Length: 425
Ligand code: DON
Image 1 (tube, helix red, strand yellow):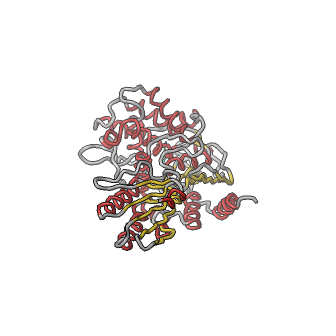
Image 2 (tube, protein in one colour; image 1 turned 180 degrees about the vertical axis):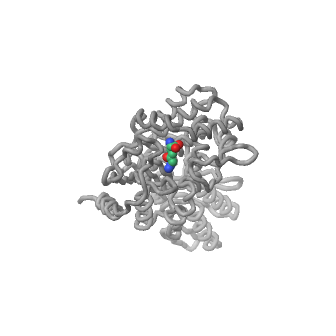
Image 3 (cartoon, rainbow, N blue to C red; image 1 turned 120 degrees about the vertical axis):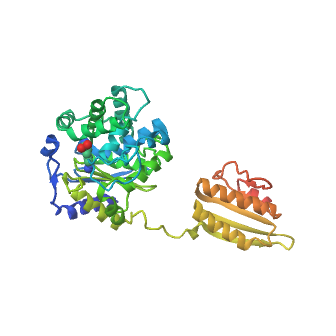
């Protein structure tokens, strides 16, 4: 059978092709030469399957879409506090190239506007590194996100540097506030090279999926950044990624996103997918017109809005059975799916309601696929309290989905690996 997903992507591309408003960016002369009719879309799952349609393999400069990825590198290299000392996380409500600095400290409002991205570029790599070493870190880091070596489009870079007066002015202001502690021209040059890296729509979908996947590149399997850094980046993309259109975007499309003036647009939905589009005509905010249209359609069709609450988690309890042999009673909770706060709460409630007169409580967790930190803490606390109430607790856990189950003070759990072993008990 042929997958219907590429056909769906081709269909939505066709349906968004009527959007011909907007204009190709021309403040960078080389970008003004772009073919305005190019149109591509790609979607990467968090386990590394990439679907694409249209001009998904055409290269273009990454521009501002580099910002969240370099922010990720800076966070990885300097730590959260080191970066927060120089760049804030508040939406500016201004255009991407405004001098939106926090009164008093001079910190740029966030890393997605140019002022913040210039300051962030200077934080990639280790303190004291020179511009060349830092640039190597940026190219290598973004290449890891893409899963292939990326290269700078020298013509785009030179063209932007010729007209980079505004970014130079921003950098000089940052220097005057000691947000930058080095030569502003060198930092703007590095930032401009970062923006000139060539990517395809397919690359961008996988890069976005890496953020959606807690920092693990879904195709190469490499952990490029930590889950905590990925969370920070996605949060800032949600509130600031679409500049002064961020509120409109988050209420309608509802996917953490970032746009670039060459026409790229990415969206990363945590735990689910990375999506990218490419179409060079831009709206007044500097966001791709067709890209915005396409994302709206896909979010609606595929139910990708962040605030669409997932189905109730009651299905974590597959079966509850009680046994009574005349001498003692036992209850078996058979769990399935994922155990996090909301699903563990369902288990807690069921245990509280039905273990009053039980001698033995068995958690059959063979069908649990994942247990997060909170799910584990809650399950072990349930074990501890059951033990303190005098119940014997057992886990049927053939695959070790809850490794080293050590409940706190007074708690005890016996782990059995097979049903036969359980029956023998
Ligand atoms: O700093 C600039 O002007 C560009 N290199 C990047 C701007 C950009 O992509 C804005 N996003 N939509």
